[in-house]
Amino acid sequence: MSTETFAQIFAQGEPNEAFAQYFIGQSYLAPLVGGNVPVSNVTFEPGCRNNWHVHHGSEGAGDQVLLCTAGSGWYQAEGEEPVSLEPGSVVRVPAGTKHWHGAKADAWFSHLAFITPGKDVRNEWLEPVTDEVYGRLPGAGA
Ligand code: MN
Image (tube, rainbow, N blue to C red; front, side, top):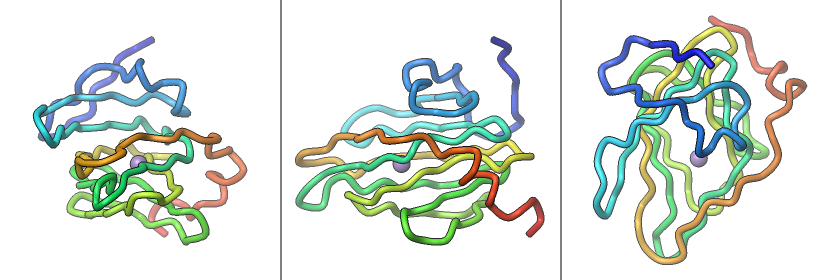
């Protein structure tokens, strides 16, 4: 596998092998800080996206926050229209929301991500975002 570099202000990290089974395409993971609220930078090559998934938690825990820093990508919650993401875009994914995020077909994409800590936090990975679904997304520049 080749490791490509995408110019961005945060570290790109290493190929995201640990979670590769839950992604289509190549992603990269850079853990930035640990502690009670670990924050990572996630980079997606063009066309790369994670599977549908749910971040679970209770009593206010388990929300995911995405802070978009470079490139161009998508966020989509089940039953909702896809949201185009650019540097500066901020997404809060409420706990229990089935969703996916990733790059556009023709662009790299990076976001910082963290999950509000607390009770019953866990991730549930589901089916891939198929080429059929991904291919229906609006084209670049739309
Ligand atoms: Mn997520």
